[in-house]
Image 1 (cartoon, rainbow, N blue to C red):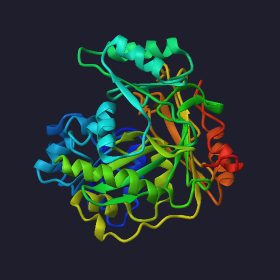
Image 2 (cartoon, one colour; image 1 turned 60 degrees about the vertical axis):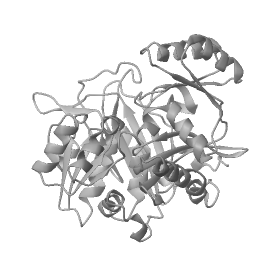
Image 3 (spheres, rainbow, N blue to C red; image 1 turned 90 degrees about the vertical axis):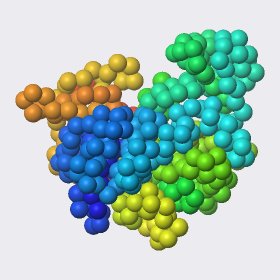
Image 4 (cartoon, rainbow, N blue to C red; image 1 turned 135 degrees about the vertical axis):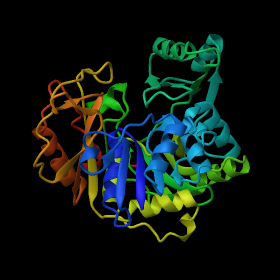
Length: 422
């Protein structure tokens, strides 16, 4: 099998790494890729949001499977174009990708499928926005209806800050919408569900850390770290979420004539009333993917190809490592604001018990590895338990040098201490 992975980040590097280790995969192409992927895959340039360009690239290299990493190409219709060209794609159609592309549409589908989620109001005017904010008690949850690279959500106790963010979302265009939601309390969890339009196969649960600073302080980011598994989660939680959330949504999408193929990312709050859906994404989440795939022993290519071809029901049960995985993100100075880029990165060699996945990196004119984005690296480590995995991950983080960089020091800390419960 020859596989093509679309994207540039640490999530895509994790996918490339797992596919390259699959005995059924003969070659992996990454487009555009990054310097980390370049060591294990053929990296080629492409406009990832141009369906014709992606189809041409896949045809040129005669690939058997295309895996689309980020959300923007899916919303742009890359999966549709590949399917029309007869090339197997792991990723949903543009219409099905609206589950992430529009928070309002996702709420509509959840309502039709009877999925447990928080109450919400879709607003198109300032008066509707203010009325919705006043309807729900603080903390206020304000979501940009469209794609926002993981940073379109504000959760705040301040009414004025909620209104300001909502008005900023509405100012994006005449058809702009903003979603105001009920705040869902309780620990959060992420579940990736592999779907082929009919069958749903869950991966293991993970938890990520959205706030930039320790103790969940500061603004939201694209994610500062993650770990898996969740030993504190109730037994059978993944299966319950498939039964009450993922399968009903897949069935509803099929009923609408837009079958869902790919990853349905279910973001959950484990509330006192039971699990409630916070959000859907239609691709692997970052940085949870880095932790989850570190523990998956079933060959990834076989799994994704079965989803793309509609044969998940015939696949054998997934195999998992008993070990724990921790991912720590190293971010550039000033992230999640305008990050400082172009600074050299060193210390990536000879990391004991850990490995690095590249996200925002590049080579300068002299071939030196430099920062090129906000989230620069993901450091991943496995251990017999979370404490051992944390020790290995943070030991590696301390060896890496990037001027002005920052990271959270509490990834998986409460779980390792046994301080979480649901």
